[in-house]
Image (tube, rainbow, N blue to C red):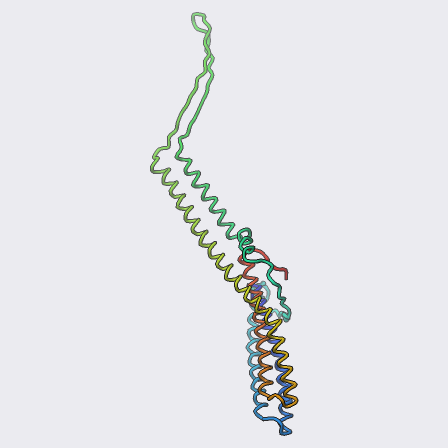
Length: 293
């Protein structure tokens, strides 16, 4: 919860930062559009469109600032700090590829997940109870050996010493009642523990597979945005700016390119946030830290 809340706070901060950059760009566009309109080379609707986008940015900013306050209070509560304690902006969240494949994560989970280890210990304890109960079926054998020395006989003869032996068997009473009942109870308990363990184990590995799939998907998307989508969107925007200044591109094209870049940047930070949340979920499933941050 601490990690996921922290990552959500990062996304809000980067979104606010992106809104600031986009707002400054739109304000410049408004100035350019107003200048062109004043000399008869632009349209008033171009100015109005840019102003509408500026109003949308302000609406997003207000909502995000409210969300940030909520996340800040939640994170402080999770860290056992005053809920109104201010937190600085979180402007850095690295993309670190996961250094494990699915088979390695499965093995780590088997070895490190405390919940699985606890249930495996319960299974071993149940096995011991069953074995102990079975031993109650067996008779209890006892063997004894004694040595006796006799005194001299009355007729003056010498007494004869002798050894005596004893062998006894204690057979359990109520063989088909008490002992059998105890064995059956322990067997049922063993079966119940095994079934519960199987359910928990299956759920853990189902969660592991789903989360690992999300990690792989978001990893590919992060790399796609870093190396393809955002650089291409920036190139397209720069081309539109140059074209608009020379009257080769209309204002709507320029505005759309700026809004596209803004949305792509928000998508990138959202995916980067989701990726790190997925890693945190994997770490919770496996039972240990998987990457060094």
